[in-house]
Length: 198
Image 1 (cartoon, one colour):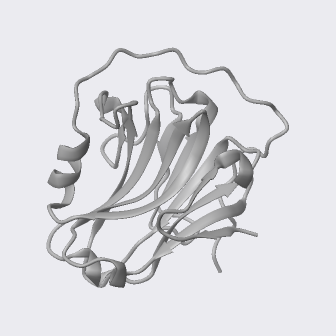
Image 2 (cartoon, helix red, strand yellow; image 1 turned 120 degrees about the vertical axis):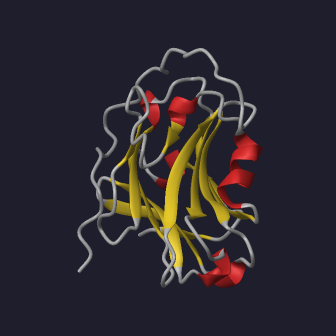
């Protein structure tokens, strides 16, 4: 049974699942609006210090493929595969975002969510609606962050300036590549997207 998160809720990934090869689904829609859904791999200063960790439609995977854009599936507008035990040590946070492409504002969106699926089973969902926003044109939906262990936070923070405002917050210098962390235990569920929605 999936845990339902509200804005601001946080949990250790290990409290949600033993899995480290995870599916992240985002569902967001509004009539006539188009969204770009991305993942930013940030360093310890919460900066995008390596552009190769800006995962979006033009760059669908990180160099070691620990973060991959999968496309729309299983009822999700966009989805990702995140392999936590392959993420380089320099990347301390993964921020999943949605920005409007063209006119509109986040108050116009219908019910949406970001969810984590492990081994085909949804383990957590953070649902949101347009009523939580006003004139924002970009929103940080949820974060995976490393604080002794990987954790998930439901964020729901909007930015009026859209992608430009979001990028200003996380723009940084290019850093040198670090060695990947050691592999995790093997008894965890493997990667599997959720069952197809009916």
